[in-house]
Image (cartoon, rainbow, N blue to C red):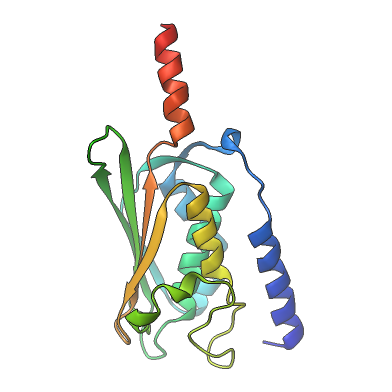
Length: 196
């Protein structure tokens, strides 16, 4: 990859990072199956080039901003394809589990994005979401060092959490926790039910 291409990629990533001054009105019910499939279609050439496979279990519906959630999964899948083992066909598994929040009627979902790539030392698990923090050199793996920072920002905007678990040579698992509904929607629903 040339330095000019790398600079263009960085500019695009920085624009993505600074964009979207979104408000509560931008949230809408979304089907994660559709959103993830759209991200996979966008990455089709990269997936074919790496002979990779993305295996997706049935995913839930949540309240979210479609363009941002699509970017979240695009970045995570792209990251898994980038940090694949040279002699292994990359496989990415995406599945979810329902979480009943304690002392509350609220429901959240954990969505796991797991791969069979090169992994990383768990001592750096907190660092990988920092802007420009790279665990590998540009010569080994292309990229701007901002993709996972964008993921963190998107998840934060959705009142969720994201963290990663890994061991060197054993792949990585990204664990995203997102509420089924946003707090402002709960308040709106309560007001609507009071009107009835």
